[in-house]
Length: 248
Image (cartoon, rainbow, N blue to C red):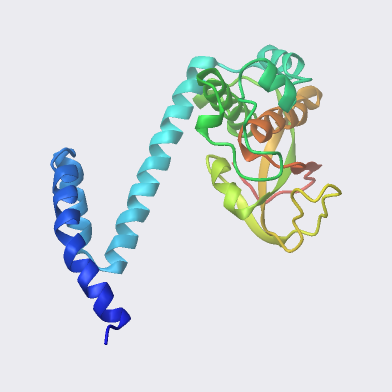
């Protein structure tokens, strides 16, 4: 009498040679360094793999940060540039970004999945990077990044995002992360976040004279949200810090 185990064994026996041939034909076309990397991974235990992955992630983040600092140095962000950025993109919502060919019309509906590269044009991907550079410059820019913004008092930026979307903002250094459960109910039932696993990102920074830092943060975050984070409402607020433990 046939059993499920026997049936599976027979099917596996038939498919294994085909699988082996396809695997060989695929691997023979791959880069040698990649193949060596995969063989090494197969020989490591779970702990070693985690350490290896952590090291690679840190190296990738360091590389991206170096590239961002290099772009900021070339940009030489100053007060006039920040004012131009705020004014130029003041009315750029999702519809305007589609109209100006930064974003594709078939991008995921607001309040759902992250917007990935394939839903942005090449111009849109470059613009998203630019908006993140502006955000970084407002928060952390100094003479080392050739950022010349007249700074005033200290403020605290608090930004609430779903945990699975927080990675797109991991370029922000000196960030405190707090856990939070969402309680917002979408009237249109597209993206209710009741009991959603959220993260509150807190960053202390120096405001720019004339409250331009806050205005620039709102503008850059709005653009980043419409181009990538894709929340219906991205919760962000800035509050004055009267006393701080940050010592420079």
